[in-house]
Image (cartoon, rainbow, N blue to C red):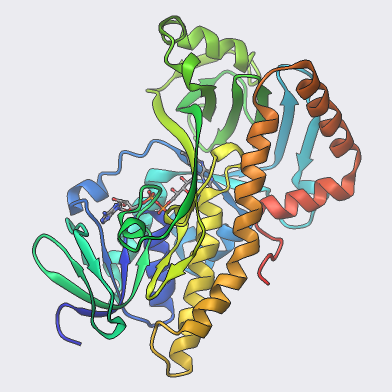
Length: 396
Ligand SMILES: Cc1cc2nc3c(=O)[nH]c(=O)nc-3n(C[C@H](O)[C@H](O)[C@H](O)COP(=O)(O)OP(=O)(O)OC[C@H]3O[C@@H](n4cnc5c(N)ncnc54)[C@H](O)[C@@H]3O)c2cc1C
């Protein structure tokens, strides 16, 4: 292949694009990854979020040798408590009820991205083009498809779009999607508190939106990561903004003892994008580019990682059979394998948010009754735990 001709180009070096590149490298398949950011910006990640990594995703990372590189800086989740407002802890998921290890792991996004970028930089199967943004895509002729960028044209046989929620690749490929603005804002920050968290995560549902308190690994202080979702009207209210800390304190209610400090707060407007097609001709979407969901269940990354994993398996099969990377039958089989998992999670998170946000006596009664029924059924609890842990195989 000449310099600007690649079998597979990945657009987007986020957590999904980078992991996909490593999955391909593990199968000794060469790829080129491009990102609109320059190298310095990519390595100096500003993402202050943490990600709840499921058992299933952790197993993929372990297979790639990424997990060991996180150097024990992850926090296992041993228990998850769920409550309606400040009420009693209506639902309790405990890892001891299953024999699969912790329910998940909380890891700092900066650490994940840095580790993935380091591994990608070392791989002889991956070439990286920084500071490279798609201007246009021409794939009318599958055998002569190319991306137009500021400086050059990059030719590909398959283009994997991992360029996130506002994917430009999706736009150029003219792939249609469902979109809904939740009119909610997620406030993300860290807190330190007086008591140890013992690996406990808490999700409290309020009419104005859910509050998630997630345990963080820190050998020096007792720390948790917060994702606090609020209706955008309230989030923009001046009085609320002024009293942010006091309002948070009311919702936190000393769950892990006295609140000691609160870090800088970052805001994320919440919406859902869900594509009607997973691929179009030789362009395939993975991760948030294909479906970006509400963070209520902390599953967006885990879902995207399953896209990356199954696509890598599919492309490896293409290679074994001596086929071109883009093969319609194999892509259809990839689509069938991913459809159920995606549809289920997009709908589940959408409906869960609808049910657990908003006020009204009926809704509140429904929530309380639902939580109670759920808590009394060990079958329901175990099945949903396995699903959230990414250990329920939903491929067709
Ligand atoms: C508040 C919040 C909390 C969350 N918590 C969790 C959680 O606990 N667990 C979980 O599983 N998920 C969680 N998620 C979801 C998770 O963060 C995303 O699903 C995941 O980060 C998506 O990764 P990605 O690589 O697909 O996209 P992105 O992270 O958006 O990466 C896209 C990459 O593409 C590049 N790019 C964009 N446009 C172009 C272009 N035109 N040309 C070239 N490059 C381009 C960008 O520079 C970037 O590097 C959360 C989301 C939010 C908002």
